Image (cartoon, rainbow, N blue to C red):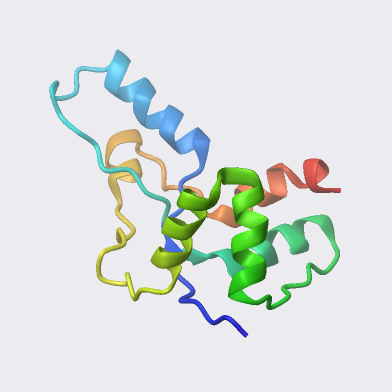
Length: 128
């Protein structure tokens, strides 16, 4: 079976992006700045699936597939070259290159960043 690295990213809630944008656009905050926005914690795809499963109140199966199956399925949607590139990335250890969680949302908006599980709970109806 194809084994790939289980990368985690600090997934950000869209409402947190909006909260920072509101401050940046309406309050006297230092202009010309770039804000590195992230969620409050790094989450893996499996953790995201578990959060959605919890939000909808049922299990979500995670099934191992071969690299060939993964390539075929991805290529059908995004094309062969992009599927190749995506699968190449999952085979590498990118832990040091991936962004860490930051507290920018709290610093700028005054409210802590929302975890992915909050987004999943808010959108549970879309997954049912």
